[in-house]
Length: 477
Image (cartoon, rainbow, N blue to C red; front, side):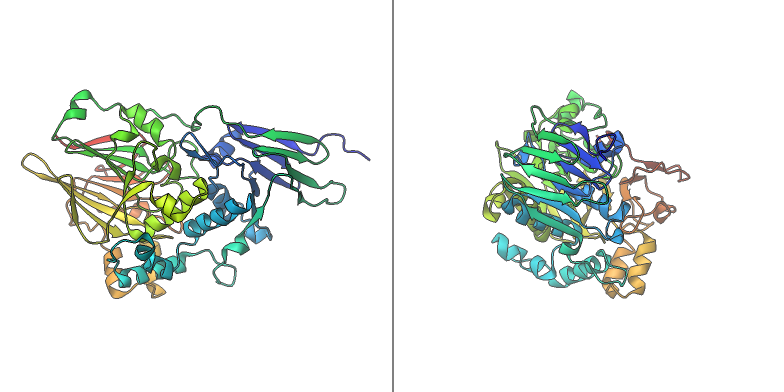
């Protein structure tokens, strides 16, 4: 008996992405920036399978932004607990590189990989091996684990399946009276999806893609644009990848007539255009870590210049693996797109008349926080930025498990002590297993700004506030 209605539905999401849903499972073809937020806003089923088109980037946007659909499957849908793996279909070459991209963003690089990053980058070797070994222990402890506490191997969580032009595959097998669901690759960006009914899908991107939320930061005034003394911080985004209402993380630092980015959110060029500057005006980008809600890799490169990147060598190495996957290029070709300026934890350095000091925050992959001092008229202003960092609750868990060395335990418990004076401190209050909590900073007397959360936090002191995208803070003039 034939079904009374089609068993396969098509959902047109945004330029470059279509979802095909059935009771057997859901296939996403095309994976542009922040596609998870689009899925959430449109209230459509979440995919467990993604097909990557042949066009891997367009208009400074990656078309293989897998991380957050995969994280949703892993942590929200609890896909592994249901006995399923996330699946990605792409060309053979793309599969290999995407696998490396997901590995370093979910599990993190191995200790050997971190220690050899400088050699691979062909730069002088200055990494502190003890610090790197300590960070590796934290990463291993926080890695996803099975019910027996054993860390998952990547291939146990996600399967990358080569899918070339002319290939046809059964994505979901027939079940009872439900026929099988197949996908055929008929061209570079052309696919046919079939069950009881059939759809032909062409991935075409005719204009730059846009976010599902508005980007409306205040423009920087002409006087501030040319001022030699103003020190300001503008928040491009303050939330995370699971929040569809606002942008993810990025800060624009302006001092001594220089512009520096701390992290690089999706749709960066739209943010900068709204503020009144261009990507070419940016003097350099600091990369705290390579999670996709902090780093839209394609937004970091330009055909007009080699972008200056400031980060620790092992983080930059992971960044290059991401770029290799999207450009489908070699390691050396990816590295050639940047002017890399290595920086090292707890080693202050001067840049454009300011003093920077980065430190390793405690996170699921190697990540940095920042202390910044800028000299003004008669005073030196100080800024603190925690980076993504564990809550004190989780720090106690790692301490009890003897993950931290004595020195590291003291450090992570005193990143922002109550007696340290800052003009402004931006702190992670995202909650959960790998982010900070509101109560961690309840007694801090500084001007404290809560970031990396889509939650509506309340009940905090008068000198504290919840960060909103677009907010600009004048530290001094």
